[in-house]
Length: 374
Ligand code: SF4
Image (cartoon, rainbow, N blue to C red; front, side, top):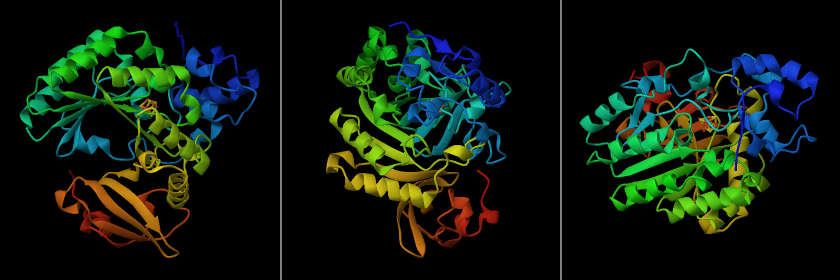
């Protein structure tokens, strides 16, 4: 199916003239992009439609709030386009465009004109990976790697798969949600996956479905074909105000994903990224949504962890009582921090670790001023 990209609010039929005029300055600051497939999933008569809120700007994005690189990814970038935060996993940012732009994106800096964090030349990153034998997993991300042509993507995958210590290539993508025809109409992509897996490098497609309504028959078929080609499929997404911040929505998402063999892997606490104020959900509210959603689904549908991608590591948010919030390092930049509990005073308004008062945990959290530069 022919899917057209829409990069200007002026060309978006679902908006009134007044909305186009009011939202133009927002789209000027934080890029707007949509496509005809996803636009057709939106109920344009409902200004609160969750899929509409996922892609159409809100004026409050212009509020002064957060920073562009909230997890300090720049600190973990040894060479342009390559991040290395955890011992065994490296990221290659191979593209700076997506099938549409999520308004709450934590990498929206990539879509800004003067940014060069992503790199179409992946060779310096590849060289870095070759020189680091501890790297067994490489995540292709961006932007969306499936926005590359299959020929270009194939070159990246082949080069990475030829590094002997790399055993898993992950493709971080929202294309099965934004435009499943990218998968359905390209047998070459499926062939590439089959060939790579057949040669001993496992491909994981890290999907990004945020709402059960994105799981259309076409999206489900795209996931089925990816699995049939040999890929493992999982899902990860943040909790986003207006889009999915209700237990019933997450329960339906978890359940449906388990039915199609694409289990939820992480649920993320939204990062305090510039422009994201309207989409933020406090940690305690997020924890409630996550736990309630889990209560409603079977064991196979509740395999996800609720985590915060903090600059010091992935911190799992485990539970809370009246006084305290309990967390644990699920991934840690400093190896010694792995598995350590972090206890903070409960604050129902806090949306990020740095706003909490830590009462026990690793040194770097108790004394952030002493946090080492990586
Ligand atoms: S698909 Fe991912 S990288 Fe692309 S806009 Fe959405 S959140 Fe950002």
